[in-house]
Image (cartoon, rainbow, N blue to C red):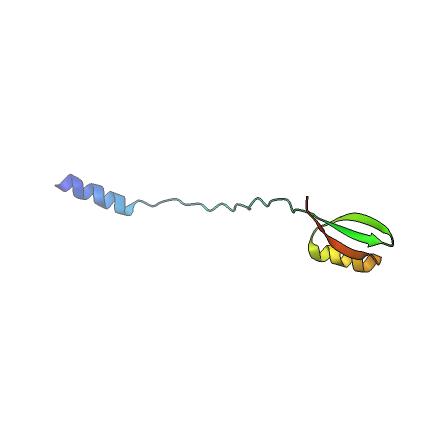
Length: 71
């Protein structure tokens, strides 16, 4: 029975080496938004990074926003 006790005490005193590694999450590429706008009588298709940017482009360029276009 003494060998069993020796094994337990040895296990209790062993130290474990742990290291931490930072992993950056792989981000999916942003999906661009396609939208339709009117520039006078001309219908134009424009790509933007987001819906908010699409509205901002229309406002800045004096375009009339029509709708978002599905791919």
